[in-house]
Image 1 (cartoon, rainbow, N blue to C red):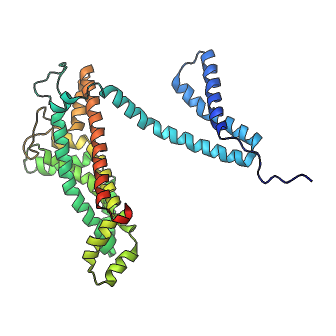
Image 2: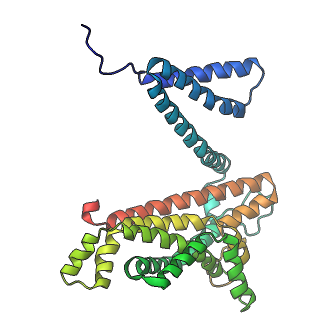
Length: 344
């Protein structure tokens, strides 16, 4: 009597890569012979061809129950790659076009007295403006957002809490240009103030507040109630429990939410065009006169339509990406340093 097999036949782990390579080779050969040499057409035909081939081979060898699992896995993988393509394309374009212009000269000089066709100039004035404006926006938005989140989680009850939650949801969907128009009409046009970096920071703070509130609220909700109850049992007041127990426990998530808000507003252009205008020279004072910023610098250079200006725009966009990455890294280090020892 032959023994009963407890496991059916399975494809080896290398079969997936062999099938992928074979489909790519055969599809590439077919397109070459038919005269179609388009990468877009190859990518569009490769995904369904690979999925169908893998499913059929798996059905013949492993059975159709495993074949359906292979089909679902391939479909999810293709969707992931499809969603990743725009991000990779944007990063590749920015790096390839901007890496040649991004040097110490570009980071240490402004566009003062630089003509549209001059092979000179840099983004130092825009970097200073962006750091000051985003820093001021963070100083405005983070305390307001954190206190609002603490109120909603720890104290908020009844109609007022529901109203606050509703308005936070509404603010989340506000277009960025609306925030800029509000600051423009409320401060510059109504009160007669001149363009300045601080008004751009106020517009960015309006966009940051709902992101900070939502992220901090979710992080505070994740703190176990047992920690609060233990503090209350020791006679610790509620405000001190929130300050010494709840906030440190949720600090890592809160910092991550703040960095998401910073990344959300650091690339905004429309509010800054309406509130800070543009200055090609260095202005260290965000409370006086127009001030440059990296998004407006990129937009201004791209509008010129010249090859050298396009290179400066790409270098400015790459600088903006690197700044966001650097700030994210610093925030994560601070969160790790301030986190409870058990979380390290």
